[in-house]
Image 1 (tube, rainbow, N blue to C red):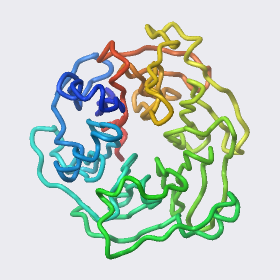
Image 2: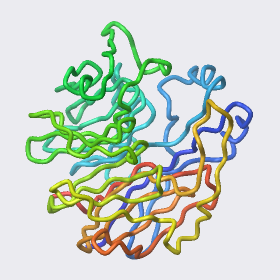
Image 3: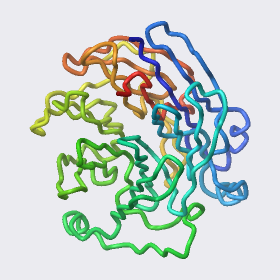
Image 4: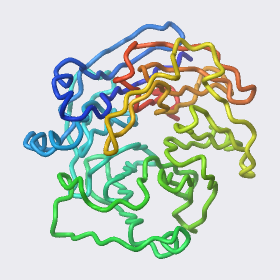
Length: 336
């Protein structure tokens, strides 16, 4: 079976002096047949923000356009934006609905599992569990979790249920939760700031923690559950762990033959996010070939890696400019 990938792009963090580039770089969402290297669909995502007036604030800090995490069920494709989720039909022909919640801010990865949608909210330190039509079924607010707060020597934060956090970018952030995994009845998330992959339900537990994993993004179990893969963005590497939590290998993409100048960076001063080549975002496994995983990079491209041998197998490039990065990466063919 061919792997049908859905990929989102983001335009990363140019500050107000480069505001004009918002009109120049237009992030897309692609549907790609990997084996045929054929783009089946290309669309422009809706505005990444809940409220257009938000740009007045963003001119003072950073700009961000494009989409983030992607998942699907047998009826819909769900695509996360900065603070909402848009829902499309399975062929990306039209948007069918939109899901909103007051805690939606800094959405990153989302997954569909057993009739539920799991949504990571980095700005509010929350993991929300929703029905297909957006009704709240459960909420893990990690900012008040005494177990993890004690382990990482953090002070708790408060969420005011009377407020709408979708436009509150300057709130305190403790963990920067940016991915979620569900296996059987257990729920796992990644703490970007602590370099940790943790279980939050039913028993809280730190699965993997490393200083070098700070800034890490996607963390996923392999389809057979034997390995855990983590995008080590800081070190341009894909980390592969055995399920015993032992590091099997670190695949440094700078040692590959990809057409990327990994030394290329753009920095705007002490407040700026760094824009660089080789920014790892997105992770999806192949249905077609065992041991193959797809990862996203900047400039926007998808790379196929044999995570057992560490070999970079192939790539498909969408862009040549490091301003545009892959963020979400989902294989429609992996659905059970």
